[in-house]
Length: 352
Image 1 (cartoon, helix red, strand yellow):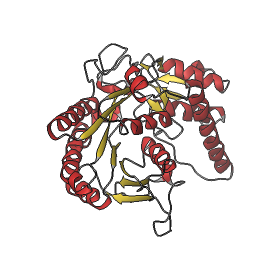
Image 2: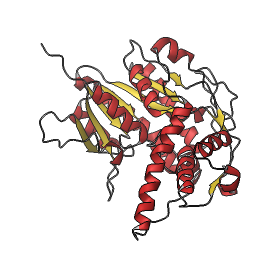
Image 3: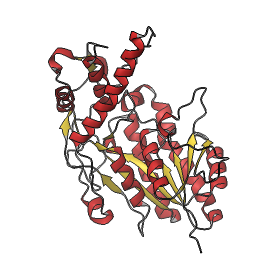
């Protein structure tokens, strides 16, 4: 008898992590369902290479309109899709923006998780096989606690984003203990890629450096260059998400490389790869300082390495090379359009 195809539901499927996770799960033979927020323009560019017309025979990727602010809609999609695994990657995930939209951030990143947990609790019996839930946490929850940070490190959030994620983290533990949900928290340290949003600092750096190299801009404006972060590649980190839901018992795991670097060092590595001098092009803009800064994050992923057998595969040098090569190609395309007389709207510089 042929084994039943496993089914996964991914919130935030159009984001960086969602696109890599969808890619990975499809390779693993899953039927994948993703939640998409309704908008007047398409936001599916990160998963366009995966998409098939659902009318075609053999299609295994399906999209549904839903939002973490709408508990009824979440429950309806869960009832329709009957997933074996749910990966909650949807969030307002920009730290700087969370200071400006704190109420919205708390609603989506905190209350949104509560709505999803309630929906999963309601429908898990209908699925007949239980539902396993992954909640995307963040190293920002550690905030002011000194590195290295592990599962036992106290949380000390320093932004509305981090505070909302701490709330969600404890909700997952509570629902796991109170209702025997198979629910895991992944405390993921910074993970980047060529699919990273352009207002996040690593992508802002590689995008600007590539444009400077091709004469499309002169300066890159940043905030705190002395912040230390533990950077890995997103495709490594989505493997860890999947591994958590394949264990016999649910638990919480830090996912990190164990190595940290300053924003300044990241800038220098990127600019050196393009034979550019950062002193000539990088400027500090006080607008990009946050009301409360997180000085240093470096994760201790010993538990994930020993229990999950997880190891990061992409080095920081490879991460930088892939991001720079990708953004150089985008810059070349932009320059070609400009030379052909097309007007290109300037990109925003918010939130670095």
